[in-house]
Amino acid sequence: MEKKRKATKPLLAITQGDPTGIGPETIVGAWARPEMHEICRAVVVGHPGILKRAADLLQIPARVIDVENLGSRQPGIESSPNVIPCLPCGGDDALAAKSAMVDARGGQAAYNALVRAAKLALDRQVDGIVTAPLNKAALWRAGHRYPGHTELLAELCGVRDFAMMLYLQLENAQALGVVHVTLHMALADVFRNLTEDAIVSKAKLVNATMQKLVGRPPRIGVCALNPHAGEEGLFGNEEQQIIRPAVELATKAGLDIAGPFPTDTLMVRARDGEFDAVVAMYHDQGHIALKLLGMHRAVNVTLGLPIVRTSVAHGTAFDLAWQGRAETTGMIEAIRVAAKLTSRPDS
Image (tube, rainbow, N blue to C red; front, side):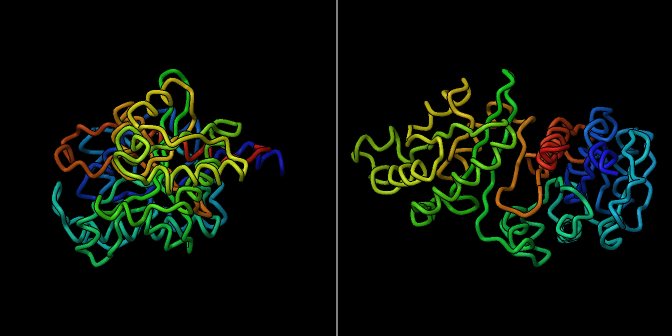
């Protein structure tokens, strides 16, 4: 029995995301690639009709089959390029949502799928979830006032200490994670939300997750907020008053951490292998640099949840959606990272 458990590939729930966007195409496109099925078993949470549309568009001869429930992890579910198991979720309104447009029906469909998948993970019916992109404006139009997946999942899981990390397997085989101290907020709000406690918290979260991904305690570099790390107070004092004291606290807590460093040079040093993880002070400070290193291979990982959640690092891409032009590398990478994070030390 124990040997069988160890040999079983993880079962992942993949949410369909906003049906008006590029998500369904990325899922179906990834499904057709054999490497996906070598690393996991998977079921899509969403509307089977949307998946069928995507399969027809991409001319992928995969059958979409309904799965009524997952029961005891459905040991019989095996991923195959020819069969896409789908756990139906939500009503038929999703079918009427207009492609490549902000539509409340698309926002509601994405919300329904995420809530269902999160519950499956919390109930241990799946080992982790991978999310296709939702559209934040559509989510709000549907009446769900969340800045995005990360905050909604934190509420569903009942956690307050959480973070977004972008993760990238670099071409030189090194891994790099970038965690964000502040996230979905106006730039003007970053300054009042930047605290020693927040920096230390995010550093501890990225330390724990990157240790799983790189197999050892990670080396962490911390970004400055101001140009040239403030030039000893000439361009701002956040480095002296907030960030440096936070780094000292994290060091005392046992983390291999250094900084603050000017971000333009820190990201180069991280790319070249000096650091495994970077703590960014705000959203674009981390996103721009990491996506320039590998936009289509980057993976969004939510830290601090009691469940594993990864996602593609792009949005609904209305300019590309439903044209058969979807890039599937990001979805494959998100699935690969989720499978790795679900693995146990004895598996």
